[in-house]
Image (tube, rainbow, N blue to C red; front, side):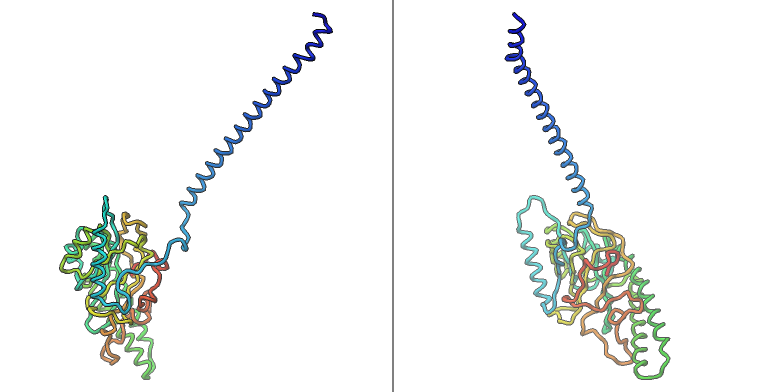
Length: 352
């Protein structure tokens, strides 16, 4: 082939084919780079999403997403017998629900009479106990209700009562100190001195009762299946078992058990016992285990029914420490259901 023809052939045939090949090769590399970049971007996005999700899971849930506080128990103006009947009806409804696996639920167990710690085992046996409610019945003298976290029955109840007794001893001493500071001889200070001395006497009586493991427990919060709750409800010492499947967190619940002496319609001025989480936060689900360690002091107390309040005569205590302002600042005034503080706002390291 002549050089002219060869060059012309090279220019017209070979060079265009080589150029097309390089173009196709360049296009393939660019596509590869694009695909590689997209893959790296996707992997990076997935890793960032995983890290963000893990961080979000360890961040505290905002208060606004926790839902409203749930009240379980007797409300103002409600008939206690009607409440017990409604609780039985609700428990019967849970028993009728078909379920392959029985689901445990929280429930408020109200007793017909005050019981000592050792009497609780045959009554609450077979279910997980979360906390108990206790009050020292001193006849016509108004006393406070306290909430004691209790997982082991009766050991935790006895231990919790000893903690309450120590606080009551401190209250009695504080009241005596306040009375001793009143030195003016006039009618107003005489009445105030009688109030302080009366509060000291009530606190001393409560401390002695709790220290000896008194017959003071009148309610409990438990967690069990509907069938186990039905067995509890059938025991002669139990007045009502109020199931609360709507309660998912104890720190978002207020339990209002009736006192044994409240047998008719609950007076609008009768007090309630707000509930808060025990000293260690229980699981948010019924399957978790609550803390068995009792708290050093109740976070909220409430006095007994108004009918038990004493007269204002000088020979009787004017009010219990919880019904007045506690000198130590530990007690709160009696709260009725509509004024009961939110359980979420209570100190999680206290119990009442």
